[in-house]
Image 1 (cartoon, one colour):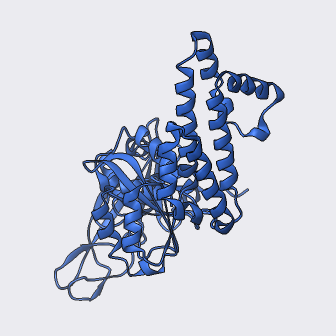
Image 2: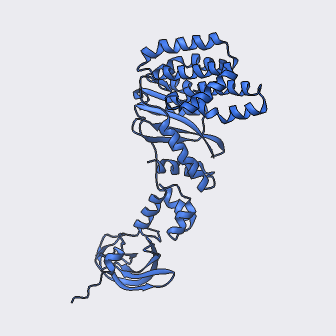
Image 3: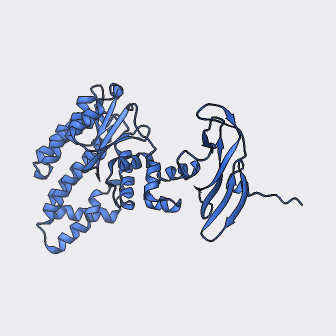
Length: 389
């Protein structure tokens, strides 16, 4: 029976000579050397295979069940011109003390929502070294997509409380992370792209600064209001009515209204008979709440319109109905819908929203929590882009 040595295959080092392997409780040590061969002198270009001397170099490698270190017996060649130089090591970048595959593994690990310290501890390097490897990653968008969406998020990075995220909701990709949300800085950023004239849709929440950026930089694009932020306005208005009516009641009914507020948010088609009876009791006690609830459901019907042409008349009728009721709690809501009338109608013609961005923002919150915040904006930006690649 043949006694084959599979050490080279286990270590994935079949192109090198393994002279010894030591396995202790702390780390796995593999003593290796490269086959001797001719090298070209970096000074005169002559070919030589004359070995001047050797040195032992410790190289960190990808952990194999435990910390793994390669001890390379490295040759230094001597040329006839007097130049002495080290042999080429294909798996070891110049000036590095870690293999190329270890560096690649460390960089890939930054795609997960874990801290740099956790990555560094796993791969047996320092946190600063892991971050230095990750800085080799470059993320710079060359062109803007056909559908562009933008949102702000609380980053607390680079000296700014809020940062901005730019994404492609059609292909579900993050385009870039910007250091702030200031209108002038956003205009300056987008103005550097020649492809901005090719952007057809600009999706944003009901932030007037984002809309002004779109009007300035994307003259050929339709501005689309994010459906969630549009619908949220009417929910907030209904909630203000509930709170005002609730404050007029006794302690018993105040508690009942507060505990039943989730029923007001629930879609009508999903209500049980018992829940319908509970809502009927609330509306009997507070008729104004019944009016607010009806306005909310009617607006949801407006947003389900098949197209902007159909929704235009529905939205105009809804605004007239809401204003005719003269409910102070709905004044901010109707004012917002008047100001964003065209953008709301545009959202009925396209399937895109800021939903993808909100998902990215949730991942960013997790990243901030596990990293205990990231003050360096460039590192923070690269982590977000890499995690959402």
